[in-house]
Length: 381
Image 1: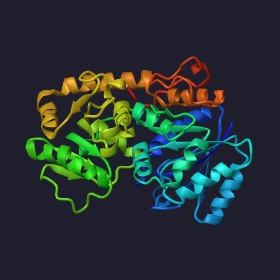
Image 2: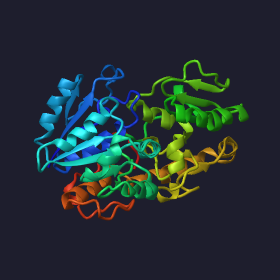
Image 3: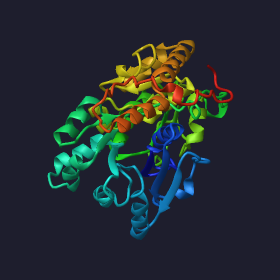
Image 4: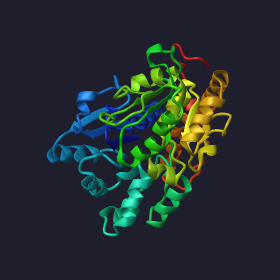
């Protein structure tokens, strides 16, 4: 099957948290035999910050103008399925409408990588043009949100709605030797965004203030000029290839969901599975649905406040933190890989309907169709 995809960027993670998701999903779909073309706009200096290395599982098209975009749509007309991801960042409304005008026989999918934001926008503005388009897509996929998001899309008239959650790519995220220059008690990596900053203040920075005896590491864009406690070190943008180094150097790693994702629930971001791949002991802020992915207290630690974070830092010894991280990694390898997510997608589109089992445990009866998981050099089983 030929896929033509419009997304923010598969070549760069610069101000683009969806890059890991795109790479994991489409690499595994390629292994299943899909032919993939990925079109992305040249915006936000992402082309100057490419960090994907060689992409041999998809043909990448970078466009700049509407004329370029017309050429992309013409090429997309020869695909079997055209996918429009949310949040491309340029000409989103144009794309959402115009991929529905392609040649007869070309199926279409809207794949939402930030469903809480999309649905909030549509709910607040009844005249939003996307509302009328929802029923016309053959498939609606989301990368999070669970039952609340599914119900919301169905109420908008969607033919179907299936969450295909973030996952682990064990070839990319895995244990590496500890880099002493990044050693710390708690690390957090995340860009400074409007609906995240307050939560970073309430969880991460407040915890640093409450526990001056511990060292904290902050990574991500946009934090320059932010007042930080003395025991917090900001290291700037952390590229995909440095996530393993940061995760493995920290005694514990913190995940903080954006406000909208936390409220909606069932939305584990890529950072959760990156930490799992590295075997890191992860503390996450509290949100509905965590237990569907990892066992609380045994595979993941949960905090509802900065005080909870400090309690974990003080009460969980290093050897126990390592055991929790190892257990989380085992669970991710068993149930939450992009290999499994790709099989879920494949079953849905091959049957031609989203009305199949969309449980978190993806079907595995076709695993022999895919290559065996390769442990990266240096990774621990």
